[in-house]
Structure formats: structure tokens, C-alpha cells
Length: 183
Image (tube, rainbow, N blue to C red; front, side, top):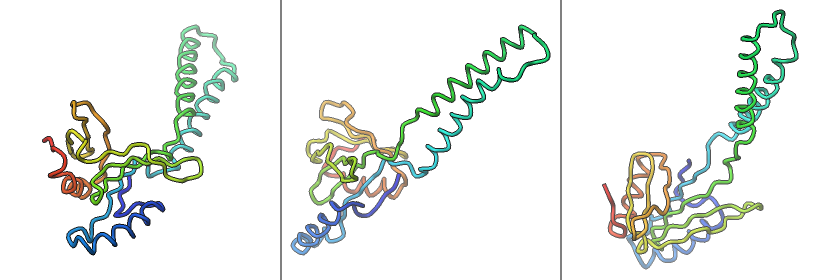
């Protein structure tokens, strides 16, 4: 998860110019920028490595039967069947893992006092998937590793992972007064 002081896409730059124009009228918001929390994995090579490992496990599952064994022991053959089925299933699971690079971003905007969830389309342009004002959020629970936002009826709206204590404290400052914070 990455945290930036401003949105990493063209929307952030448009918002910055609008914010700077508004900040002249409101002196207290001069340094307020949206907090963007990304669900994106930091290590993109992980998917390739896991798929390669899965393919190797699937090949080795069939490779156990290519070489003839010197003894035709039924217990050994039973173990070979179990190991080859296990390798094949684990290899299949590893090769079908989803690519985590197209995960949504949660943008907590202190000026508009709203939460926006953005997802990039096939062309890389951000599209707003969810937009909620802080006033319409029922409550928030900030833990060490994540923030949970709840509806007014108490059901879970969204859970966003937090990467650091700095992001947690910045989000607590933004939400305090606008959203009921649970301990």
C-alpha cells in the first residue's frame, strides 16, 4: 500500500489547483491535500514468480510418473499419487492467482469532506466507483493496520488497509468531528 500527499493521477492535479484557489479564502486549509490510500501490492514481480512456481509444480506432478521406479511397491505408488495430486492442485492454485495491480484507491478528501474510491479502467484512467460524504458515514474504527468505515445501520461499508501510523493519525485528524470514531 502506498500513501501519497496528493492523488497520483490527473484528478489530483485538478484538485490541487481548485484547492489552492479556495485556500486563499480559507487560511486553515492551505496545506490540506487528499489522503490517498492504495490497495495496490508493492511487489509486482510476485505474480510472475508465483505463476512460474505453480507451473513448475504442475510439471513436477506429472514428472513423478515419467521415470520408472525400480520397485513396484504399492505403498510407494500410493505416496506418489498423493504427492502428484497435491503438487498439481497447488500448482493450479498458484497459476490462477489474480493480478493485484488493478486494485482500487481510497481517497479521503479533507476539503470536500468525502471519501472516494477510484478504480483505473483498461486505459489507466481513474473512474469513481464510490463517493460518500463524511456526513453520510455512520462511523469509523481505526486499528493499527486498517480503517473500517460503517454505514448508519452499523454494517461495514469498506475496510482500507493503512500502511503506517502517520496515515492513521492523518486519517484520524480528517475524520474527527465529521465521523463518529469507535475505539
